[in-house]
Amino acid sequence: MKQAGNYITEEKRKALEVELEDLKGPKRKEILDALAYAKSLGDLSENAEYHQAREDQGKLEERISRIEQVLGSSEVVSGGGGDVIEIGSKVVVIKNGEKEEKTYQIVGSEESDMSQGKISNRSPFGEALFGKKKGDDVSFKTPNGEVNYKIINVS
Image (cartoon, rainbow, N blue to C red; front, side, top):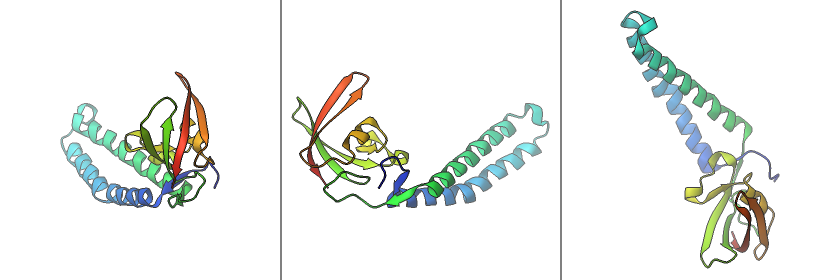
Protein backbone atom coordinates (compact mmCIF):
# COMPACT_ATOMS: atom_id res chain seq x y z
CA MET A 1 0.00 0.00 0.00
CA LYS A 2 1.44 3.36 -1.02
CA GLN A 3 1.33 6.02 1.65
CA ALA A 4 0.43 8.87 -0.71
CA GLY A 5 -2.60 7.22 -2.33
CA ASN A 6 -6.23 8.22 -1.88
CA TYR A 7 -7.88 5.85 0.57
CA ILE A 8 -11.24 5.51 2.28
CA THR A 9 -12.62 2.89 4.61
CA GLU A 10 -15.56 0.69 3.67
CA GLU A 11 -17.62 2.55 6.27
CA LYS A 12 -16.83 5.92 4.64
CA ARG A 13 -17.57 4.54 1.15
CA LYS A 14 -21.03 3.42 2.27
CA ALA A 15 -21.71 6.75 3.97
CA LEU A 16 -20.71 8.65 0.82
CA GLU A 17 -22.92 6.43 -1.35
CA VAL A 18 -25.92 7.05 0.92
CA GLU A 19 -25.26 10.80 0.90
CA LEU A 20 -24.89 10.80 -2.90
CA GLU A 21 -28.19 8.96 -3.34
CA ASP A 22 -29.93 11.50 -1.08
CA LEU A 23 -28.37 14.47 -2.88
CA LYS A 24 -29.24 13.17 -6.35
CA GLY A 25 -32.79 12.26 -5.33
CA PRO A 26 -34.76 14.17 -2.68
CA LYS A 27 -32.36 17.09 -2.22
CA ARG A 28 -32.08 17.80 -5.95
CA LYS A 29 -35.88 17.68 -6.30
CA GLU A 30 -36.28 20.00 -3.32
CA ILE A 31 -34.02 22.60 -4.92
CA LEU A 32 -35.71 22.29 -8.31
CA ASP A 33 -39.08 22.86 -6.60
CA ALA A 34 -37.64 25.93 -4.82
CA LEU A 35 -36.37 27.26 -8.17
CA ALA A 36 -39.75 26.73 -9.83
CA TYR A 37 -41.50 28.52 -6.96
CA ALA A 38 -39.01 31.42 -7.06
CA LYS A 39 -39.46 31.79 -10.83
CA SER A 40 -43.21 31.98 -10.35
CA LEU A 41 -42.73 35.09 -8.17
CA GLY A 42 -41.76 37.12 -11.21
CA ASP A 43 -38.83 39.52 -11.82
CA LEU A 44 -35.70 37.34 -11.40
CA SER A 45 -33.24 40.24 -11.21
CA GLU A 46 -34.35 41.22 -7.71
CA ASN A 47 -35.78 37.92 -6.54
CA ALA A 48 -33.92 36.84 -3.38
CA GLU A 49 -35.60 33.43 -3.29
CA TYR A 50 -34.46 32.71 -6.84
CA HIS A 51 -30.86 33.76 -6.17
CA GLN A 52 -30.75 31.69 -2.96
CA ALA A 53 -32.15 28.63 -4.76
CA ARG A 54 -29.54 29.01 -7.53
CA GLU A 55 -26.77 29.28 -4.93
CA ASP A 56 -28.10 26.18 -3.15
CA GLN A 57 -28.25 24.34 -6.48
CA GLY A 58 -24.61 25.23 -7.19
CA LYS A 59 -23.50 23.97 -3.77
CA LEU A 60 -25.49 20.77 -4.22
CA GLU A 61 -24.01 20.03 -7.64
CA GLU A 62 -20.51 20.82 -6.33
CA ARG A 63 -20.97 18.35 -3.44
CA ILE A 64 -22.32 15.68 -5.82
CA SER A 65 -19.29 16.17 -8.07
CA ARG A 66 -16.89 15.98 -5.09
CA ILE A 67 -18.44 12.74 -3.77
CA GLU A 68 -18.33 11.15 -7.24
CA GLN A 69 -14.69 12.20 -7.58
CA VAL A 70 -13.78 10.73 -4.17
CA LEU A 71 -15.61 7.46 -4.87
CA GLY A 72 -14.02 7.19 -8.31
CA SER A 73 -10.45 7.93 -7.30
CA SER A 74 -10.15 6.34 -3.85
CA GLU A 75 -9.11 2.84 -2.97
CA VAL A 76 -11.25 1.16 -0.31
CA VAL A 77 -9.15 -0.36 2.47
CA SER A 78 -9.98 -2.54 5.42
CA GLY A 79 -8.55 -1.88 8.87
CA GLY A 80 -4.82 -2.46 9.32
CA GLY A 81 -4.43 -5.21 11.90
CA GLY A 82 -0.78 -5.98 11.15
CA ASP A 83 2.42 -5.15 13.01
CA VAL A 84 3.33 -2.34 10.61
CA ILE A 85 1.35 0.91 10.62
CA GLU A 86 -0.65 1.48 7.44
CA ILE A 87 -4.04 2.87 6.43
CA GLY A 88 -6.65 1.55 8.85
CA SER A 89 -4.18 0.77 11.65
CA LYS A 90 -5.03 1.81 15.18
CA VAL A 91 -2.00 3.17 16.98
CA VAL A 92 -1.48 3.82 20.68
CA VAL A 93 1.22 6.43 21.30
CA ILE A 94 2.62 8.43 24.16
CA LYS A 95 4.16 11.85 23.71
CA ASN A 96 7.65 12.24 25.18
CA GLY A 97 7.43 13.90 28.57
CA GLU A 98 3.76 12.99 29.11
CA LYS A 99 2.04 10.06 30.84
CA GLU A 100 -1.26 9.88 28.95
CA GLU A 101 -1.51 7.40 26.09
CA LYS A 102 -3.56 8.39 23.04
CA THR A 103 -5.10 6.18 20.39
CA TYR A 104 -5.33 7.22 16.75
CA GLN A 105 -6.48 5.54 13.57
CA ILE A 106 -4.65 6.20 10.31
CA VAL A 107 -7.19 7.04 7.60
CA GLY A 108 -7.25 8.64 4.16
CA SER A 109 -7.33 12.42 4.02
CA GLU A 110 -11.04 12.44 3.09
CA GLU A 111 -12.13 11.10 6.48
CA SER A 112 -9.56 12.54 8.87
CA ASP A 113 -11.05 14.03 12.03
CA MET A 114 -8.79 14.75 15.01
CA SER A 115 -11.78 15.03 17.36
CA GLN A 116 -12.47 11.34 16.66
CA GLY A 117 -8.80 10.34 16.73
CA LYS A 118 -8.65 9.80 12.95
CA ILE A 119 -5.49 11.22 11.41
CA SER A 120 -4.71 11.49 7.74
CA ASN A 121 -1.99 9.39 6.17
CA ARG A 122 -0.84 12.63 4.53
CA SER A 123 -0.57 14.68 7.73
CA PRO A 124 2.90 15.19 9.22
CA PHE A 125 1.98 12.88 12.13
CA GLY A 126 0.47 10.26 9.80
CA GLU A 127 3.54 10.37 7.57
CA ALA A 128 5.83 9.95 10.58
CA LEU A 129 3.86 6.92 11.82
CA PHE A 130 3.44 5.19 8.45
CA GLY A 131 5.53 2.02 8.15
CA LYS A 132 6.64 2.06 11.81
CA LYS A 133 6.13 -0.72 14.39
CA LYS A 134 5.37 -1.11 18.09
CA GLY A 135 8.27 0.21 20.16
CA ASP A 136 9.51 2.65 17.50
CA ASP A 137 10.06 6.32 18.23
CA VAL A 138 8.72 8.88 15.76
CA SER A 139 9.20 12.60 15.46
CA PHE A 140 7.87 15.27 13.16
CA LYS A 141 8.01 19.02 12.85
CA THR A 142 5.13 21.29 13.89
CA PRO A 143 4.88 25.08 13.83
CA ASN A 144 5.85 24.97 17.53
CA GLY A 145 8.90 22.78 16.97
CA GLU A 146 9.66 19.09 16.79
CA VAL A 147 7.37 16.61 18.59
CA ASN A 148 8.41 13.09 19.63
CA TYR A 149 6.21 10.06 20.29
CA LYS A 150 6.77 6.44 21.30
CA ILE A 151 4.57 3.79 19.68
CA ILE A 152 3.03 1.65 22.44
CA ASN A 153 0.80 -0.62 20.34
CA VAL A 154 -0.35 -1.22 16.77
CA SER A 155 -3.51 -3.08 15.81
